[in-house]
Image 1 (cartoon, rainbow over the protein chains, first blue to last red):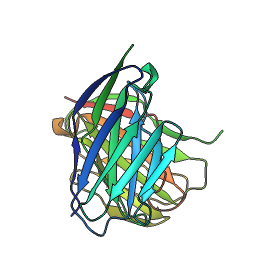
Image 2: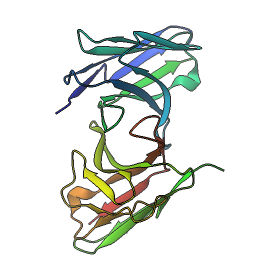
Image 3: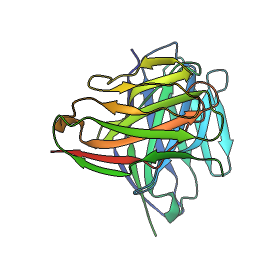
Image 4: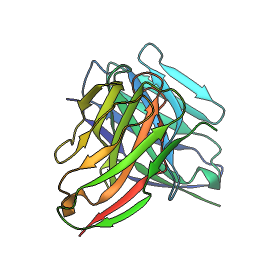
Length: 111
Length: 112
């Protein structure tokens, strides 16, 4: 079955700097890679996703890249702001079945 | 307002006392799923449902049951709860498959 690893587990950056979170997956059949943000005490919310027929996707300050050959994908947040502080989860799976979540990265943006 | 609701939000119970956590969505979503969240382990899928009367095991189904008799509801049943089922539970739904899942507010369960 699918296994998703995520690094780092914690990340601190200065406001305005960039943050990068990396994930690897094991199942080459995976074709859907969403990223969720969970603020303290809140529910996870989808922030961006990418499918296997696309190598990169951007949405304002957030971008995701996918390397299918190496089976890894990354989340890039530019110009970080204090409100970006949260736990971020990557996930990998198939768009018709289920996804497996990584263990999460706790991001702190220091003002 | 489009939403996923869960009840109860908080529950403290004792070992072996059957309980049900309800989940309801008003978005006509076909796909519904239950996850548990434990520190350092991320979100682990318990069960999911592709549509009415169609359910399947996720990664950690032991000790749980589900049913999908109506499209909007997907209750999670713990027939005989044990302390290792103490966790934060999330229900999620989406139009089709696990694409763009919308999560409920969570249910914090403590089993003593």
